[in-house]
Length: 374
Image (cartoon, rainbow, N blue to C red):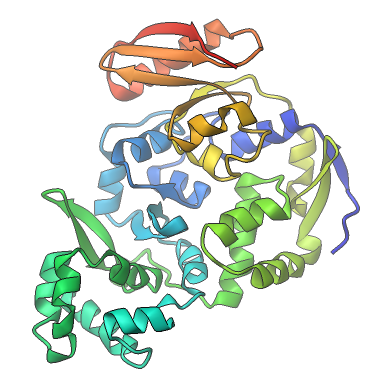
């Protein structure tokens, strides 16, 4: 596709436009499911961080609303990016699972040897799992107890006794089950096709372009390397496929010059991007928030290289105008903001965001501002 650019913007403009897409400036009024759908996926390994990622993007929110949305089927949970558990929107989360399934891990010789399930065995195994959870969610142990009553799967007793994590993942990729609300701290699996909002896992050729479009809609302007990081490294979609999907969008994409970097957005977003004005909004985000993880911590326009290690280690970022300028940490009612930037601290805006965070977590927070190293 052509690399000629149709517009020229600054990174400050680009990040301001992206912050609006992320419901960060202005903060949005979308329901919980709308926030998850906008972000594409929300990492769910740490429930408190996942909830904060959603609540900080909502003008009005309440504790427990993400768990309630999961219980109601308004969002679903599956193993997705980088093999980790994520919240997805049931309406279009299947596009990401289609890409994750593309490698057909269950057909690899090492998989077949370890689980003693051939590719020909796999459809019957999937059907047995769906039948087992037909009456409601089961823990992995309970699922194993049911499946291993069948002589065909008795050899999997030890696998289920150890948690069956790797065995379960492709079942979520293919839409057979999703992760249900935990029971006594234990993971549960539930049938997915009974959720009326679930639209299934589309064909790969349909899912691929849709996933590229969804990424650019929220995380643009983006280079092909950004797309490859998100959908390739994240979901193992495969470089050849990604390039064909990207190129196949043709005139639906527009190349823009962002301070000398050629990046892409959807063609119908160019006008809004050009009209964007730099943001000075201060936001306290949770560790591994999609704002940082979506473009990747190597993206110096969002995460300056001196702060990359902190973001990789799940520090909570203080974002100003879309750029990580510091970190924050809370212990009970004590909130400490560590400023890591050469720019002057926007004290008033930091205090306002600290008050907003206090409202979200239900605490009267005492703020301490400290200067950190470069």
